[in-house]
Length: 259
Length: 374
Image (cartoon, rainbow over all chains, first blue to last red; front, top):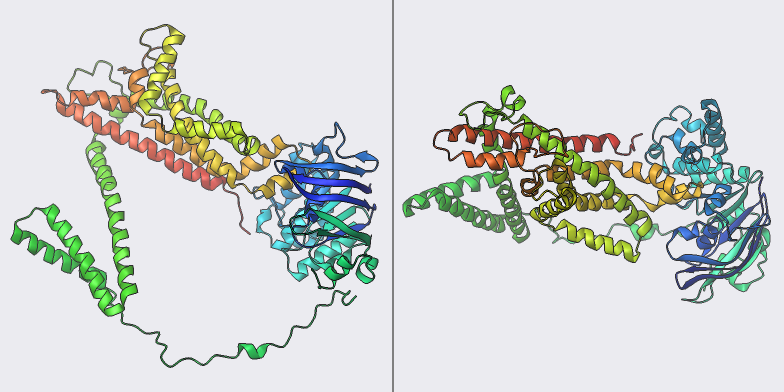
């Protein structure tokens, strides 16, 4: 079910402000692609444009093409809601729904879309998703407790379980570990490794070690200059980016000699 | 390429930087302190001086209280400044001022409650609550406010039925759809203007509206009162619901969108449930606020001695209007006392209704509040 994504000449605007310019990327199916770069260079913006979450912000728009499995996401007559059902997203801060229990949080994608299902079917989805998110053993005895009562790392894995419960083609992760401790981070990274066999994963991270650990391909974003739009500096297999980068700017950034 | 593994570098050994700094000998962390009962002692002292001074001057109780209060402020501040230092002295002064204003704010409220309860309490008999005024208006005994209670509930209920949907949907538009659009800004401005409409004007609006609709030169209708009160309620409801919806974090909306949930379902299933406690509280407080309105009801609903359940035909008695009209009876040389009792009794019932609404709002707020427990 995993699909590949082709991004062609993507320009992203907030109102009149050009935030990211000229991004060209081919994201392979069933692989992990990491976006790294300094704050404010547009990594998250590009990520959000991959499932049309970008346009949730008033005034935000996109020029260029994002093609998933031959279909243009920004073509005429494309329903952003349908796009988001195929391309799930995990956010920087864990955001379980505060009114729902753990069980209901996992089922949120199905329940909120009013999909009718039997109790047994729902139980199966919940268990499968929680197991997929490495959370089942920790919460199986308190599924009816509020999702907000979990620890930060557990909440984040709950959000991942919620995202994979709707069985998307692609999973986008916007700095999923930046609010987590090393143990939880390691749990989420293990999870990314497992999910790779079923999903196409795109992850934005500030942690270069993390990008090196989990990803197959890495894209380095940077600002052209202060006040200029962000752009994609280099996109290559992770081993190449971290051992023998093509661009001097990439090397400067990952070796800590930035600027 | 200098670093390409995930191994973190060992931190420099900087333990030496954290060795204790030598303490200067002059550093003093002790200062004088007033006894624990200092405030109480000063109050007694100030009261005594104030009373003696007031009696010598032959002043009344108001002057004595003011005098004692001024002496208390000066004495406590001076004493504390001398013993404890300037900062503590200022702290005590400001503290005393804050408490004084708190007491000033509470006094009228407590006095009002006390008066209404002591005067209205004995009037509240089952008879008083279950009878109306049919045939009793001119008599020196009997009668009740059943019809007025029912009227108030009916008219306020109609107002709520009109105002809650309008207010809630307006707020949803403002927060979820309007964002910073010009229409939304205009609506916000108009809602602010509406907040300031004098209640008598909303009564005039209702009466003109129903003159046009019914053709009657002076319509008396329960529904008219509902319209007038709804007009007063809508801005409050819009404002409070808007604030509550704004408190719902965008993270939750995005989480829902990212699951492929359409916007309207996100609002219905995620945003509203998350904010429901505050919304219900705000709405209930808005209802409580208009339940005691008199002026517009006087104009459009009028007064009637018995229960009228039909809001589309004829006058309806309501508690505030009942209180207002009964006040005319208190000057009656023969039956003044019974009318006074009726006024206090009705006032107490009105307060109880409003307080009950406030309590219900709190309880509902607690029930619906998102649970974060472990």
